[in-house]
Length: 394
Image 1: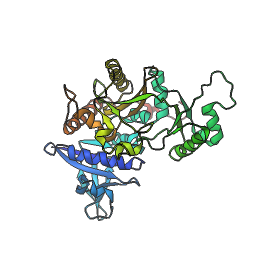
Image 2 (image 1 turned 45 degrees about the vertical axis):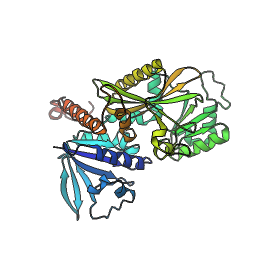
Image 3 (image 1 turned 180 degrees about the vertical axis):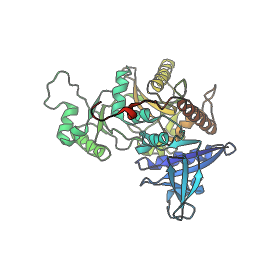
Image 4 (image 1 turned 90 degrees about the horizontal axis):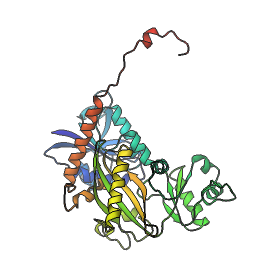
């Protein structure tokens, strides 16, 4: 039986969502095939292990001093997780694969992936570079644009822009006194987003300068860099999950989130809203769109997956502009909520139908295979540089 560690939680505004995903993963893994070790990262960034973490209730009011909870440390030298017990370290496990269920923060931006890569431990999902790129909404927009994909008109506010004050930021978005013909300015309604967050946190739609100033102020509480986009008012949001590796991939059924507001809020995604009392009413699966649009979105999803060197299971969000009949790429989520298992589990026909357990088994297989293939690559080069070096410039 393989040792599988599931890491979730984290020092992130998406901490609670990650806990839900983590517990879902823990309970969906096949216990006949795997020894499963839950690793919870608290809001301060400390790692803990407890058998009780299979139960969501144990994490709602987690007490790090509980007898059955042990702080966890990782050893770079022997690829092993240790648990702390009365100031002594005891081996917990040597994971053959880690399933990442951390949303946002250092769990999804490539930092945790880099730690595991340095420890030579296989992990599910996209590697360091792809994770870092996709976490950054501004960099993602530039790359998508460069690759020829349509994206909504946008304006990026850098950290330097933000330091110049709210009026400067507003002028950069709306035009202000600038008369440069090469400058493109946005028109209301405008969406303001922190550059490195998900789950609709810190996002607001603005219809005038006063709302724009307030939205920028809110976004600045989460990130010094901000993305401003022209909002498409007559639109359909479509999500697609993609599963695969660097060799090939497949696309799930398409999902149409059903929102009572202009965009899907955090509460609607994970709790429910005034008019959406349960998650089944919040999703239309499969999405009822035209055959040509469905084919185009699935083609885009596969192309993006390969261009960005993604791996495991991801979710790519699209927007259909009903007025222009155009498809825009919105965001790429390398560790989607619930790992998007519902887009595979509800598939009615064909190879895309998978239980959550089968999806997780495939993620483990992809992670281990990719790790083994990378291990075959040469990582050293013998030279006489050190022996012959006598100081001075190269």
